[in-house]
Image 1 (tube, rainbow, N blue to C red):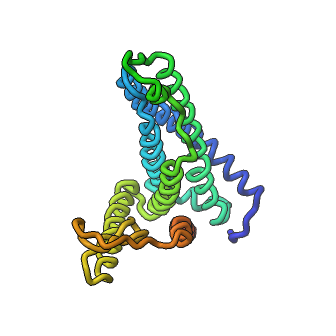
Image 2: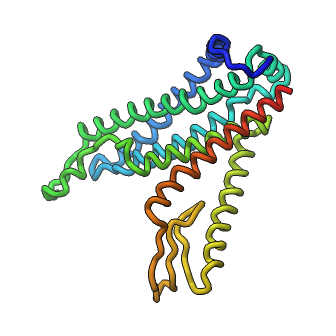
Length: 274
C-alpha cells in the first residue's frame, strides 16, 4: 500500500472504525458528563448560601480537558496490546496518512468538540440551578449582588484558551506515546512528561540566572518572559521581553511542538507498518 491519500478509502476507514468503537466512545462521553455533573453539582450545593465560585468552572474545564484528552489519546491505540488486533489494523488497506488522520480526527477533533459540548451543557445547567435555588444573604450591599449571580464560563477567557492549547499539545504527546508504548501508555507517557517538563523548567530558570552576575529572578515556565534584577528587598528593575516577541513565542513554541509530535507519530506508525 502506497501513501497516496484517498478520500473514498479514508471514508471507509472512518466508517469501519466508528462502527467498531462508537459504543465505547459514547460510554466515555456519558462518563465525562456524569463526573462533571457530580463534581460541579457538589460545588454548587456547597455554595447555595454564598457567592457563586466563578473560577470553579475554569478549573474544572482545565482539569477535564487536559486529563481527559491525555487519557483518551493514550488509549487510542490500545488494541496494539493484542497482537492479532494490532496486525489486523496494520494490514488494513489504507495508507499511513489516512490512519494517522483517523487518529487526529478522533483525538483532536471529535474528542474536543464532544468535551466542550458536554461541559457547556453541564455549565449551563449548574448556573441555572444556582440562580434558581441559592439564598441571597440579607446583609449584601448592592455592589456585591452580581457576585451572587452565576454566569456560564467565558470560553474566550485567557485561562481557558491557554488550557485548551496545553491540552492539545499534551494530547498529541500522549497520542505518540500510545504508539510508542503498547502497555500502560498513559502512565509511562505522563511520567515522561513530568520528568522532561521539570527538567526544562529548571534548566530555563538556572540558565537565565547564570547569565546575570548579580541576584536575579526569571519569570516564565519554558521560556523566560521577564527577568527581575536584584534581591527581594532591593529590586533594581524588571526586564521584559518585547510584547511582539512574547506574542510570537506564545504561539510559535506550542505550534512547533504540536507539529513535531504529530510528525513523529506519522513516522512511528509508518515504522510499525513496516
